Image 1: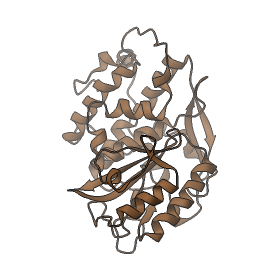
Image 2: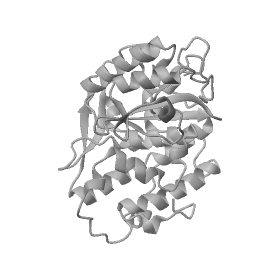
Image 3: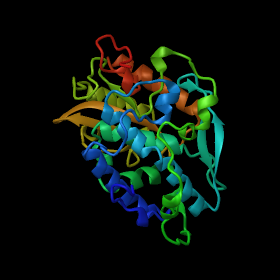
Length: 315
């Protein structure tokens, strides 16, 4: 950020600082992150062994990875204290390993690393809701309880400026790898491999850009989602709602976020993101959603399970 003339002086661990931070990141994204060293990878890519689909994906994930540590400082400022902890994941639908989360006195588990990775993936996918100045702030407010805080921290200037005097860490340093790197990893089912971004509902023949083919049975999908408890502003989902861009759908009290995505005027996919839901409840919801969309000739899974003729992972 310092080397590219970014807003280091405004990084005071406040929620409001997320707006200039995201403006800076978007600016660097649009020019391709030329300041990021060739071959740099996000730590999870190195740890889990997957290969980014493009140099821009690698650079975008690498450049945003430190945000998880900045979010840690924001959580510490607003909630009084914070620590990195190991949270076990025992959902057979996804990777079975121990993941690193942030815990505060008021919030027991904030997946800071996943928030950063999902944002980078959504930006790469062209999601309009993250391509605005408030994209990062809105995601943090949606995935944490910081928006409920009555007391704002006393801010004493940039927390990043003092770091400019510290030695730099190489992109390949093991310091960048999270504690989850040393935990055993097992894929319970190849067809249920969890991706870093949102899960998606789309045609089994959908391209990696999710620009088609369109979802034709929108009315039946809307009825089925309503039966699963999906709501729009508290009301059951309708075909009109599901066909409206920039719509946000929720399950429960913002436990799961669902958003329709379009190519031209055609509904081509529906993103599904767990926000504040237990692993067991998420697994049950996934089972029911999988049964619904399969019956409609659609597919539910992580993004990397689309884009090939046989529906196999693209990487």
